Image (cartoon, rainbow, N blue to C red):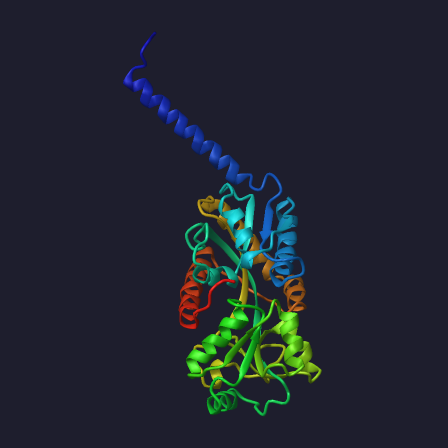
Length: 327
């Protein structure tokens, strides 16, 4: 048997490497060459699902491939996230990351993935505001009055939420901490029941999801006190924010964005980001999202990555202070 000479070995290795690079370049240049699955960790008609379908359809139309949405709800979207974390990093399986994933990083004692390490952020898609609302019988109309009333009877005022560890729960816990309050938490299994019981006067206040509580505010069944966004809501410009009402720095919004498994080629990430940024800037998409109380968002992959890391750190502090743990 002839023995390959060292020079021949090196030459063969270089040729193999060159071929691999060439094949990789061809694959990324022709991306997407087949349908791209978008996994959502929440049920159909949820905010994350609506945002995913609106943007994915437009991106798919522009790139000439389908971007079908696959709903895999459960464990605060951790089931869907776990599936994508184990998927091939080739750009053909994406995930809709949300504020829930940032919270889950500290809410769950153990997850089979690290959201900051095992995913490559592509682009944000949108965000939905939360609102501090009270039952009309509660004698308050400002954040300062809420704080004063709660301090006058520590532990006696109650707030509801859509569940332990959800943004409405932790927004209230952050409010407690920043204002030096002690209010009692009443968790529900979802926003609709919590909203219904607040209207029935079962508890005093809630940091409700805008899309769920805004109709009730307009019909006078709830009273809006403040928005949890950094700026006032375009739909309710007369409503102040919590931050401008005496708690500077307070912000709690539900955000959604596209991420891919870590290791996905940079070229694919950039290509998807460019198309998603273009799509979210169109009046048609902005109007479709706004109809569902979702404000379109866009940024570079790096900016989105930094935003996610900041959110993970921010809510980890709130989770620790509140003592919240996944059910």
